[in-house]
Length: 139
Image 1: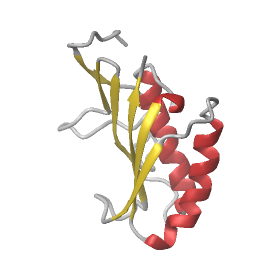
Image 2: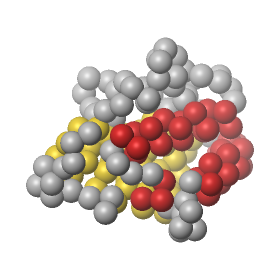
Image 3: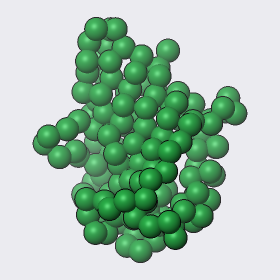
């Protein structure tokens, strides 16, 4: 990865996260800000959607994909100021939240957890139960 300057806008790419659609980047860094595009429960190597019907396993895989893009942009979860979680149904909130809390807390040694919004909505693929995007500030 190139180290961007305050005026440089840089696309972040990694083979450790699913390839994005051709109309957007996996992530974009401008100065200290790094925005990770919405990630889902996709295997980066095969491009397959994983764990049909299992929101906990999908949440874990999705957060691993977010983490890969963060890492490629020079950040980690301790640099994340905001996570947005999109779920297809309110019924999955508790199960998602359990995995989310374990995953994110373990990756924030500062003890300061990111802010978060959770939205219940339709997602681009029927097999997706969860999608997550992130905004990080890299000093």
